[in-house]
Length: 195
Image (cartoon, rainbow, N blue to C red; front, top):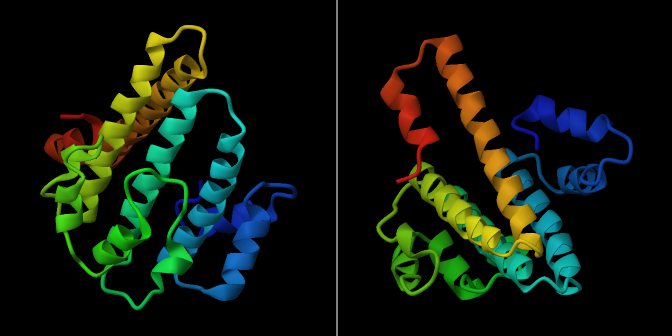
Protein backbone atom coordinates (compact mmCIF):
# COMPACT_ATOMS: atom_id res chain seq x y z
CA UNK A 1 0.00 0.00 0.00
CA UNK A 2 2.66 2.52 1.01
CA UNK A 3 4.69 3.92 -1.87
CA UNK A 4 7.27 5.79 0.24
CA UNK A 5 8.33 6.67 3.79
CA UNK A 6 5.38 9.04 4.26
CA UNK A 7 2.97 6.31 3.21
CA UNK A 8 4.58 3.88 5.64
CA UNK A 9 4.22 6.43 8.44
CA UNK A 10 0.51 6.69 7.64
CA UNK A 11 0.13 2.90 7.80
CA UNK A 12 1.87 2.90 11.19
CA UNK A 13 -0.46 5.62 12.45
CA UNK A 14 -3.72 3.90 11.50
CA UNK A 15 -4.90 1.91 14.51
CA UNK A 16 -5.85 -1.63 13.63
CA UNK A 17 -4.38 -1.57 10.12
CA UNK A 18 -3.62 -5.22 9.33
CA UNK A 19 -0.02 -4.48 8.32
CA UNK A 20 0.78 -1.89 11.02
CA UNK A 21 2.02 -4.43 13.56
CA UNK A 22 4.06 -6.32 10.95
CA UNK A 23 5.54 -3.05 9.69
CA UNK A 24 6.55 -1.97 13.20
CA UNK A 25 8.23 -5.34 13.79
CA UNK A 26 10.07 -5.15 10.46
CA UNK A 27 11.25 -1.59 11.12
CA UNK A 28 12.88 -2.84 14.33
CA UNK A 29 14.91 -5.28 12.20
CA UNK A 30 15.99 -2.98 9.36
CA UNK A 31 15.66 0.55 8.00
CA UNK A 32 16.55 -0.41 4.42
CA UNK A 33 13.38 0.26 2.41
CA UNK A 34 13.91 -2.62 -0.04
CA UNK A 35 14.26 -5.07 2.82
CA UNK A 36 11.36 -3.52 4.71
CA UNK A 37 9.18 -3.99 1.64
CA UNK A 38 10.34 -7.59 1.19
CA UNK A 39 9.80 -8.52 4.84
CA UNK A 40 6.34 -6.94 5.02
CA UNK A 41 5.40 -8.69 1.77
CA UNK A 42 6.62 -11.97 3.24
CA UNK A 43 4.47 -11.57 6.33
CA UNK A 44 1.45 -10.51 4.27
CA UNK A 45 1.73 -13.39 1.80
CA UNK A 46 2.36 -15.94 4.56
CA UNK A 47 -1.01 -14.96 6.03
CA UNK A 48 -2.60 -15.09 2.57
CA UNK A 49 -1.22 -18.60 1.98
CA UNK A 50 -2.42 -19.78 5.38
CA UNK A 51 -5.92 -18.44 4.71
CA UNK A 52 -5.97 -19.78 1.13
CA UNK A 53 -5.38 -23.34 2.36
CA UNK A 54 -8.84 -23.28 3.92
CA UNK A 55 -10.57 -22.10 0.76
CA UNK A 56 -12.65 -24.46 -1.32
CA UNK A 57 -12.03 -22.37 -4.44
CA UNK A 58 -9.22 -24.13 -6.32
CA UNK A 59 -8.90 -21.35 -8.90
CA UNK A 60 -8.38 -18.71 -6.21
CA UNK A 61 -5.84 -20.88 -4.35
CA UNK A 62 -3.91 -21.45 -7.57
CA UNK A 63 -3.95 -17.77 -8.43
CA UNK A 64 -2.71 -16.79 -4.96
CA UNK A 65 0.18 -19.24 -5.33
CA UNK A 66 1.09 -17.43 -8.58
CA UNK A 67 1.05 -14.13 -6.66
CA UNK A 68 3.44 -15.66 -4.11
CA UNK A 69 5.77 -16.82 -6.89
CA UNK A 70 5.57 -13.38 -8.47
CA UNK A 71 6.46 -11.66 -5.20
CA UNK A 72 9.43 -14.02 -4.75
CA UNK A 73 10.65 -13.11 -8.24
CA UNK A 74 10.22 -9.37 -7.55
CA UNK A 75 12.07 -9.62 -4.25
CA UNK A 76 14.94 -11.58 -5.80
CA UNK A 77 15.32 -8.94 -8.53
CA UNK A 78 15.12 -6.02 -6.10
CA UNK A 79 17.71 -7.42 -3.72
CA UNK A 80 20.04 -9.01 -6.28
CA UNK A 81 23.68 -8.74 -5.31
CA UNK A 82 22.97 -7.65 -1.74
CA UNK A 83 24.07 -9.65 1.25
CA UNK A 84 20.75 -11.17 2.31
CA UNK A 85 19.83 -14.56 3.66
CA UNK A 86 17.44 -16.15 1.13
CA UNK A 87 15.56 -18.05 3.84
CA UNK A 88 14.75 -14.78 5.63
CA UNK A 89 12.94 -13.38 2.58
CA UNK A 90 11.63 -16.41 0.68
CA UNK A 91 7.84 -16.78 0.86
CA UNK A 92 6.52 -20.33 1.01
CA UNK A 93 3.32 -21.19 -0.80
CA UNK A 94 4.18 -20.68 -4.46
CA UNK A 95 4.10 -23.47 -7.02
CA UNK A 96 6.97 -22.77 -9.40
CA UNK A 97 9.60 -20.69 -7.58
CA UNK A 98 11.21 -22.76 -4.85
CA UNK A 99 13.83 -21.62 -2.34
CA UNK A 100 16.71 -22.85 -4.55
CA UNK A 101 15.51 -20.88 -7.58
CA UNK A 102 14.92 -17.85 -5.37
CA UNK A 103 18.48 -18.03 -3.99
CA UNK A 104 19.93 -18.47 -7.49
CA UNK A 105 18.05 -15.44 -8.78
CA UNK A 106 19.23 -13.41 -5.78
CA UNK A 107 22.77 -14.24 -6.94
CA UNK A 108 21.99 -13.05 -10.48
CA UNK A 109 21.34 -16.41 -12.17
CA UNK A 110 18.80 -15.39 -14.83
CA UNK A 111 18.60 -18.96 -16.16
CA UNK A 112 15.97 -19.43 -13.45
CA UNK A 113 13.52 -17.47 -15.60
CA UNK A 114 14.23 -19.71 -18.59
CA UNK A 115 13.51 -22.77 -16.43
CA UNK A 116 9.98 -21.45 -15.93
CA UNK A 117 9.18 -21.78 -19.64
CA UNK A 118 6.61 -24.56 -19.10
CA UNK A 119 4.73 -22.53 -16.48
CA UNK A 120 2.53 -19.43 -16.56
CA UNK A 121 5.79 -17.48 -16.00
CA UNK A 122 7.08 -18.30 -19.51
CA UNK A 123 6.70 -14.63 -20.63
CA UNK A 124 9.46 -13.71 -18.16
CA UNK A 125 12.17 -15.53 -20.14
CA UNK A 126 14.92 -13.15 -21.15
CA UNK A 127 14.04 -10.46 -18.58
CA UNK A 128 17.11 -8.83 -17.04
CA UNK A 129 15.83 -5.75 -15.23
CA UNK A 130 13.26 -5.08 -12.52
CA UNK A 131 11.11 -2.66 -14.51
CA UNK A 132 10.59 -5.16 -17.33
CA UNK A 133 10.01 -8.00 -14.85
CA UNK A 134 7.30 -6.03 -13.06
CA UNK A 135 5.60 -5.05 -16.33
CA UNK A 136 5.52 -8.61 -17.70
CA UNK A 137 4.58 -10.04 -14.32
CA UNK A 138 1.69 -7.60 -13.97
CA UNK A 139 0.40 -8.56 -17.42
CA UNK A 140 0.66 -12.31 -16.88
CA UNK A 141 -1.08 -12.09 -13.50
CA UNK A 142 -3.86 -10.06 -15.11
CA UNK A 143 -4.25 -12.72 -17.82
CA UNK A 144 -4.32 -15.50 -15.22
CA UNK A 145 -6.90 -13.64 -13.11
CA UNK A 146 -9.06 -13.04 -16.19
CA UNK A 147 -9.37 -16.81 -16.66
CA UNK A 148 -11.54 -16.82 -13.54
CA UNK A 149 -14.29 -14.99 -15.41
CA UNK A 150 -15.21 -18.26 -17.11
CA UNK A 151 -16.77 -19.56 -13.87
CA UNK A 152 -19.76 -17.32 -13.12
CA UNK A 153 -20.47 -19.01 -9.79
CA UNK A 154 -16.91 -19.15 -8.47
CA UNK A 155 -14.56 -16.77 -6.72
CA UNK A 156 -12.57 -16.50 -9.94
CA UNK A 157 -15.19 -14.19 -11.41
CA UNK A 158 -14.81 -11.82 -8.47
CA UNK A 159 -11.03 -12.04 -8.68
CA UNK A 160 -11.09 -11.23 -12.39
CA UNK A 161 -13.32 -8.22 -11.77
CA UNK A 162 -11.26 -6.88 -8.85
CA UNK A 163 -7.93 -7.29 -10.66
CA UNK A 164 -9.30 -5.55 -13.76
CA UNK A 165 -10.59 -2.62 -11.67
CA UNK A 166 -7.25 -2.43 -9.85
CA UNK A 167 -5.41 -2.32 -13.19
CA UNK A 168 -7.79 0.35 -14.46
CA UNK A 169 -7.06 2.50 -11.37
CA UNK A 170 -3.30 2.10 -11.89
CA UNK A 171 -3.60 3.14 -15.53
CA UNK A 172 -5.70 6.18 -14.64
CA UNK A 173 -3.14 7.23 -12.02
CA UNK A 174 -0.31 6.88 -14.55
CA UNK A 175 -2.22 8.86 -17.17
CA UNK A 176 -2.95 11.59 -14.62
CA UNK A 177 0.77 11.76 -13.76
CA UNK A 178 1.59 12.03 -17.44
CA UNK A 179 -0.81 14.94 -17.83
CA UNK A 180 0.31 16.70 -14.64
CA UNK A 181 4.06 16.37 -15.22
CA UNK A 182 3.93 16.64 -19.00
CA UNK A 183 5.64 13.29 -19.51
CA UNK A 184 6.20 12.04 -23.06
CA UNK A 185 3.54 9.66 -24.32
CA UNK A 186 6.04 6.88 -25.09
CA UNK A 187 7.34 6.92 -21.52
CA UNK A 188 3.89 6.23 -20.08
CA UNK A 189 2.52 4.09 -22.90
CA UNK A 190 4.63 1.05 -22.07
CA UNK A 191 3.41 1.22 -18.47
CA UNK A 192 -0.30 1.30 -19.31
CA UNK A 193 -0.41 -1.48 -21.91
CA UNK A 194 0.16 -5.21 -21.85
CA UNK A 195 1.87 -6.88 -24.81
